[in-house]
Length: 144
Image 1 (cartoon, helix red, strand yellow):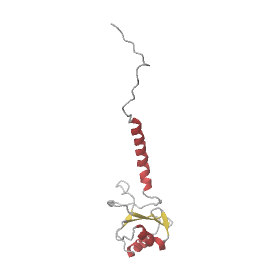
Image 2 (cartoon, helix red, strand yellow):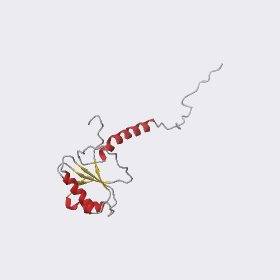
Image 3 (tube, helix red, strand yellow):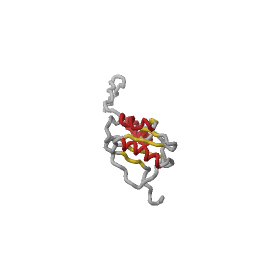
Image 4 (cartoon, one colour):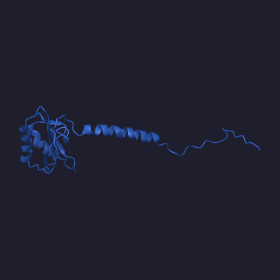
C-alpha cells in the first residue's frame, strides 16, 4: 500500500471553464424591480387629479399624444407647457400633420368643465378624429 504524495506546486492549475451567473441574475432582478417601480411614474409628468370612471380602458396600438390641463388651467403637451394659441400648431407638428393621431386629454377634476371642452373643440376643429378623455381608475363598488 503505497501512498503517493502529490506536490501542489508541481500540479498546474487549470482555469475554471464555467461562468458563475448568480451575480448576473441578482443584478437583473434588482434592475427589474427598479423599472417596475419607476415605469408608472414615467407615463405622465404633469400632476393632474383625474376624475374616476367605471369605463374600461382603450386598447393601445401606438403611443398617443397626451394633452394635460392642470388645476391652474395650464395646458401641457406631454410634459411641455403650451399656450392655447399654439396648441393646435404644436400638436400638428408633433403628429406630422396626421389628424388620425390618438390624443388623450387629461383634465384635473378641479378645473371648469368648459376649459376641457374648449380644448377638445380646438382639436375637433383642427380635424383630429381620435380624441379621448382620460379618467382615473374605476371606482370599486365598495367605495360608492
